[in-house]
Image (tube, rainbow, N blue to C red; front, top):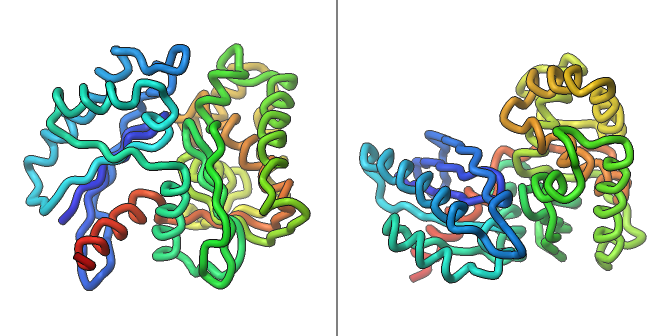
Length: 301
């Protein structure tokens, strides 16, 4: 039995897995909305933000005492990658919790996304899209192999922080988010003049969109496919005054009240750019990919 803690920009997640015959099986998932990206001032994470991370990690560490874990792995993505005081934050976390945190590069994050997704669904040809709180990973694969990958320095929470003045984006702010995403996506050479039928989605923003899609179109809860041309229709559900929009968001994603719409705009912009037909939500992602890599590396040694 292994534990993995994922320190993200919006949420910190604890997952416990049983490992058997070279495969991992999820046993427990626990999520805390820490909003670490909100504690970044002038590129540095504040002491309050670092302490927030420590508090959550200590709570998870206490939980783990009740499980017969062989090992507990902790990694961070854009939350600690995209700050100027990464080393100070890591030292404080080590001192306060006794935990060593592995900070993934953007390319590593995209690669582990792919490794995880490949154990969940058949990956033949398409684009993998992971929208996190502070970064967005885009990876192109062909014949089950990674061709190119990039990590973009924005996510659902950072888009909210940088562009939204109230709880939900105005029409003007939605257009600004879309323009900011498109500006970065157009720079990606391996996406230029390419069309991909399928986008494999990873991350909380796409999961929340999938849940909303199933609710609006009265599809089974277990449905994991979103028809791409339906995403603009889903965004149109968020019209009206703020209270009406709030009610709609709370029905589908109460823990993502402020980040759901920015995340959906990021997803829709990328999907329109690559002209995909559908988005398939992967059950596995970076945490599972990271664990597979860790266990595989140990076997190699």
